[in-house]
Image 1 (cartoon, rainbow, N blue to C red):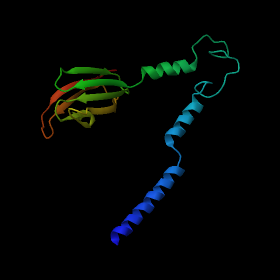
Image 2 (spheres, helix red, strand yellow; image 1 turned 45 degrees about the vertical axis):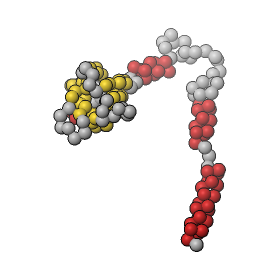
Image 3 (cartoon, one colour; image 1 turned 180 degrees about the horizontal axis):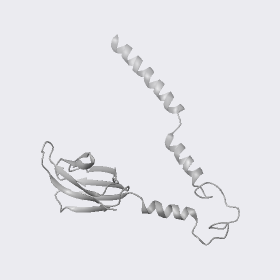
Image 4 (cartoon, rainbow, N blue to C red; image 1 turned 45 degrees about the horizontal axis):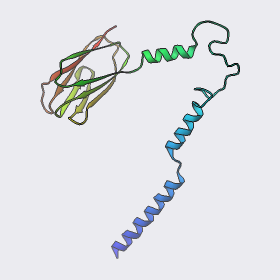
Length: 164
């Protein structure tokens, strides 16, 4: 008797969840439609140009602001580095304020730390440690350590060298 009631409740819940799944919109489809509207055939903003000319409207030979913005975005984009625990120590030279993404691979499970910046991640043979950080404004050298879990000592994998 109790099993029959449980089965009926489960079927009702299955029916309700199926109805909700049919009613709610697909977020991936909506995102694709929005992207198409924003960057369709008429350009990145969706606005169509009246004159068909490129560059500043006032005839200034300087580069357009959109190109300047794109160039500065490329120059200040994230710096990505792949490191391997056990390899030779490599310095990573970066400027203050830049975004730094580190992927540290380890042949055995290891704790990857940057103690001066308060970062900790775990790496294993099948999953690297990801450290995503904003480089501090103060200059200096910040070592990245790799140690077996529970081991207070470790080896230096790399050094983040922040210069001005």
